[in-house]
Length: 304
Image (cartoon, rainbow, N blue to C red; front, side, top):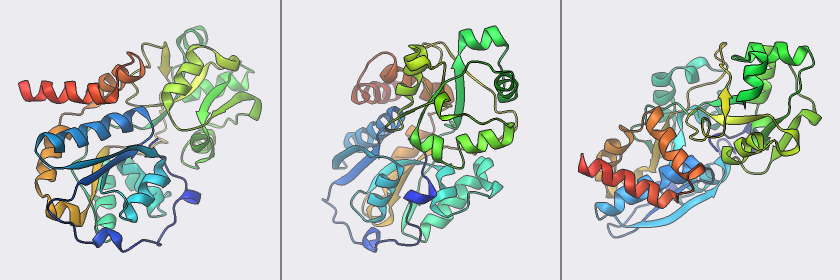
């Protein structure tokens, strides 16, 4: 669950707690969002710190974007993985083009959050942007490769039912943005809105044709796409911003444990698109726990 909507972020109402002092023996409270990738990234962060004798407290899979972001702002958690593109909502800049450029997106969110005592560390190179995907049999039968193809298919009355989270359906930057750019509109009967933001559920609904679903909300780094027979429709008009995951930490915590920066940089530098897809697939498709997936991956880095 990478995204936040304007209605769920209280802009400009920040607690002073992020600036509070931290003692050297205080545990770093590590959190994450509730989706598959959030749990994997959160485990990678927490286990990396533990392996280097930095004490941690587990608050992983705390909630959606608004819940985790608010907890960080309030000093209730210390560190969690966030996505650069969400700065569009944090700072009420959804109309800015900076979010469609990886470097500009990172620099903008880093500079804005620095004013609030929040530090963005090195991001992964993977871009976990939102996507619309269809079953492979549907794509092959109707030559669906792009969202323009989907728009033409829908205009011709093609059968289509889409599984997505409420956040995806409601966020101006997600489904409404796709619909506006490509000139189609899905009716309520063409939507299956699932609670939470886990794409494992939306992809499974499409794969199993739950309630007639043949398409799903997915992310660029989803590991289950190939295994579940889904095809990402190309966003040829560049509707979506860049969403690179990066650790965000309270400044006072980083001052107490400055090694966090370099330790997490080493790990996140290895997380390209293919790597993150594989780690996500081990959880979403192969049924492994995020704890084990992260541990095995860190072991592999140590052995290189």
